[in-house]
Length: 619
Image 1 (cartoon, rainbow, N blue to C red):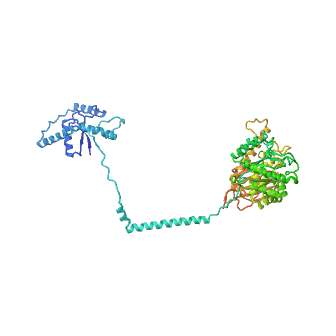
Image 2 (image 1 turned 120 degrees about the vertical axis):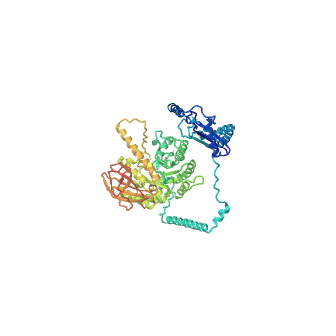
């Protein structure tokens, strides 16, 4: 191993102006201390510098020191003592030192090569050891009295190898380690069994979640009914309806009930053609395009196939023609389902179900029985003008339809409405109940209840247990205007308002539309509103309040005031918390704005106002 020593010493003669001597040794082993001291002594006497690489130009500190020494010599001029004659022993040591110096001089070239290699391998060795500040790339000269020693790193220390296999086996077999291993093993299994027992105990003590009821696609969202494509869009045909599918998707509707659109001359059963679309309604290609667009948006399409929808002799013509019409309907159902229709609606289902029960059973089987190609259930939707809960309940049982729209919500005051809802809820599963206001006969919601109560009834439809069915235009408060099929109003952001009245009407339509969108989205994601239990709390002639809840999900309290005056509602229920959050209020009033917290047991509602509160499950 090569070791390099660089030594910087003072001149022995302090009166001389010679710079410090640099002495570098490049030897195979560390020089003896006596040889090193003798060499330094010889060099100090001869005043010879052994480092040819030293910069001949003195640095600033050395120049200043030399000037001060010269000035001192001029002023003081001390007498130099004569050299002392050398003794024989000293002469011998000097000869040995001179021999060592010669050996050093002969190895200078090897020193230079080694030094350059060292500088390339470790640039840090070039830095001055005296700590003088300077530029990073500028070599600093050595100061007098500084000794710089550069040595290569020592050989790596011996690595720790640890115990070998035989030693480990001997140690592992000692009684102390055997007892330790057994203790740790026993502690591990005891801890594992303890955690297992705790998990089982938690599972047994935790309340069991209720099983979700079987549902179909029509139970998971509201249905939007368009009985007249001519009035629904400015185009007045199926193509125009296809252009409004995106608007229905924004309102979070799950299904579109459209039609009838088939060829049906008034009161002419012989000319009835279920499989052909009337010219004024559009074409089969337009209907197929509507199906594609709606399915792409996640909306199911239900086709109304009521036979005599333009006549006055009844939906199924006369009793004598019911059999012929039912046979035609069976063939038409196969055709339309092959085109991709997701269900059918039939008005006055009691007429055909009672007149030809065997044919009605065939119709039900075609619609409701799934196939391998189409496992998704198709909807058989009936419509009736019956308003009593008893009649509607009987039709649901006798006809076997999946959903049945009726006029049950239009019969009587708030107290009778609540009784009708309770009767149907007690007799049938919520998945078979449908709630609607208006239709082909009565027309639109705003004309039936008045604009003041439009928002109240919208909240009612979306919070009752069952599927809400909305007539086109009810989301904006459309009025009949002398016909049950008025022209739909489509507000455009680019339109310029003519006066303040039109601007106010437009603002009101936007508010109702926003309410429907919010209620439809809320119902779709909240299980308590979608499939939850229905518990009435307040039931009077002018007010109603009930709770919707499901298992451990958040609860909702809906309260309504039909009166023309303010009302104080005090729902009494053990599950009501001290405070509940206001989800929405129609219209919004002081203290009943969205996000506010109120006492659900003491609600003060304004005239025609409704509110929806939310509170968590309390166990």
